[in-house]
Length: 156
Image 1 (cartoon, rainbow, N blue to C red):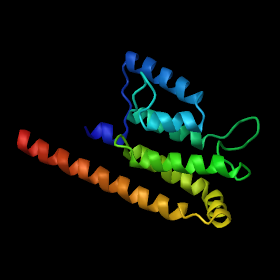
Image 2 (tube, helix red, strand yellow):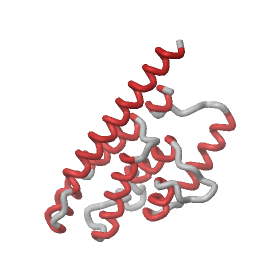
Image 3 (cartoon, helix red, strand yellow):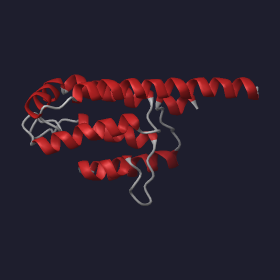
């Protein structure tokens, strides 16, 4: 249970094959497809902890050819908004892990300039939305942990 909460990957060969397929499939997704995946609306492709982590890795990666991030300050407003909404969707997902929260925090640190510019130009409050979503995700993780402790106490 705690390994799932922490986002630890399993290491058997069948799991490695599934993980490669997951990485390959998510690497081909655009923002709309990733949002559908996170909301569990992709047939035969259930959302899981590793998938959330992989989506966040894709948002954090830098294109080697252009040296640009997936969501960059020069992108159009609709792409930035979709990316920000995707981050909030990850944080509110039931499968969120500590690793996911750490990756979101890294994304927010690297994207601080984009968030400030978008909020200022579009009169939005994504900075506050991100803070609230992270707080909610941490509270949910604490609740899961407390429930697991109670279950362990009752069961053993």
